[in-house]
Length: 120
Image 1 (cartoon, rainbow, N blue to C red):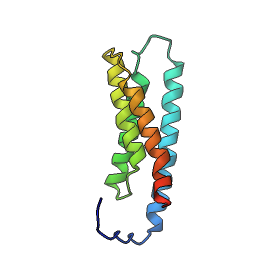
Image 2 (image 1 turned 45 degrees about the vertical axis):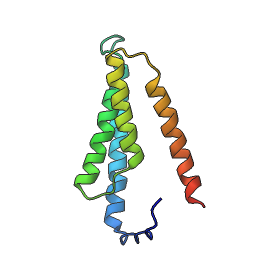
Image 3 (image 1 turned 90 degrees about the vertical axis):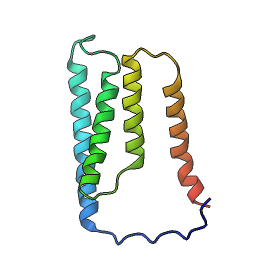
Image 4 (image 1 turned 180 degrees about the vertical axis):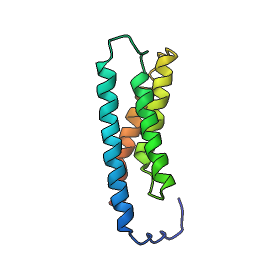
C-alpha cells in the first residue's frame, strides 16, 4: 500500500471530453459494423475466434487513438481488448483449457469491486 498523498487531478479540458465522446461513438459504430459484417458472412467462412480477435484489435486500436491524441486511455477497454485478443488467438490455436473464461470472471469481479472499494 502506498503512503503517498493522492495526486491532484489535472484541470478538466472540455476538448478532451468532447474528443473522448467522439472516440466512443466511433468505436461503437465500428464495433456494430464489424459484428454485422461478420454475421453476414456464411457460416464457416472465418475460423472460430475471428470475432474476438477483431474486437480485441478494435478496442486496442481505439485506446491507441486515445493515447495518441492525449485523451486518457480506458483501462477496462484496454484490458478487455487484450483479453479478447488472447481469447481469439487461443480459439484459433484450439486451446480447450478454461483459462480465458476464468480470466473474464476475474476481470468482471475486479470491475464490479473497484467502485465499491473507492467508496471507503
